[in-house]
Length: 496
Ligand code: MCA
Ligand code: AMP
Image (cartoon, rainbow, N blue to C red):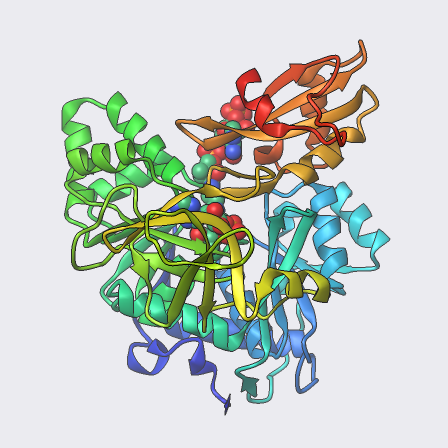
């Protein structure tokens, strides 16, 4: 199916062009303005060509009209949008830009740096800001459902992040599924403070809201005080965050005098929906949040490769510690290590998923793409049981995947970076349970006398995002290994 319509991205354009789409500080931007702006960017990107023909266009913007305009424009121009992390280290940006084979990186002036200039010079990438794109009216877009539309980088068990490619169809399936399941409407108002290089922020918040004609308030980062203030003002009726953010909000509320706390909790209480996801929400957090705000958090489970797969009901019992049932269009089974189906709901099994929201491929990694599926079932690596029809995630099959602050991290990627440090000869990284972050990164190292944890952490900053840098260190003479010489990582847990 093909459509010649940019309204694909903005169904509300015809219905409510004057409604507010984005709120950025004092500035309010209507749907008409977003569309006019993205059309201008589309013309500039195309520069007289009919289509970008799948060009991977990387962009580096915080939550802003520029980000939204580029996201829409790249896809509508027939390109593949590659939104990158504004907090990424230069080496990580090098990896993403190189993997995606980008020829241009469009970025905010304030994010330009010498280090980025070096990265882009090395990869012969043209750096420019959205404002520098030429003003040229574009031809009408021709969008195909099977067009590759979005590339998001995600960590796996095999080292550096892979580019997960979604088509227009899988992106649209994600958006429409959630709009139906969670009752989105044009009356909704949501704050967006999540990073915009992951599905949670991009799809669940930004795309669902814009597709519904709702208003999105943009924040450069999460700050409990700023958000709390606006919540108390009654600015929002929907709230979506990772568990760490609910933990931070609870801690912040605990510091406030009763009156201020009451105003914020009342703001949350009057919302229609509070969602938690990207990592397990501890039952204690669910309960404390409900005590404070009377909101039963709607916990859902998703993955970059799948969008959202399981969700507690919007109407009906939301069960703490559980991620609900498959969303419409999602088929789930559980398998054992040999790939056999598990039918007994009490027996733990790996979630295997088939869904119209599923990704198309890992970019230029046919081997990894093939390995990710078994007979058409995507193997998630997450282990679950089913309690009375509600799925409960027990953990992950691999100890090498860490979830910290909602970010999925690869222990192997962190180990590889640390091994480049001259004082470290051996290293093993694991995630250690933590009340605030879910898990924190911990590293056991065999190191020489020069090793200084603070200095190594500082040195990491060029190589790793801040959330990947180990918080806990153990220096040892030898790592525990099995007869094959492989580090027995579970043994490390008791070290921290
Ligand atoms: C930051 N810090 C950390 C970590 N991150 N310490 C331990 N572990 C961490 N992971 C430290 C910093 O070094 C700093 O320390 C202090 O915390 C504040 O740092 P800052 O970067 O300002 O942190 P923050 O703004 O408070 O960030 C917390 C956050 C952020 C808002 C929860 O981590 C976040 O946005 N997470 C969401 C990630 C996300 O959207 N994931 C979705 C992917 P110091 O003060 O000492 O300098 S999953 C997905 O998309 C799937 C589809 C799904 O299911 O949703
Ligand atoms: P990502 O690849 O960054 O999208 O992270 C996906 C992973 O996050 C999943 O494979 C799970 O391990 C984890 N995850 C997401 N939501 C939940 C949840 N509600 N409970 C437990 N784990 C979750």
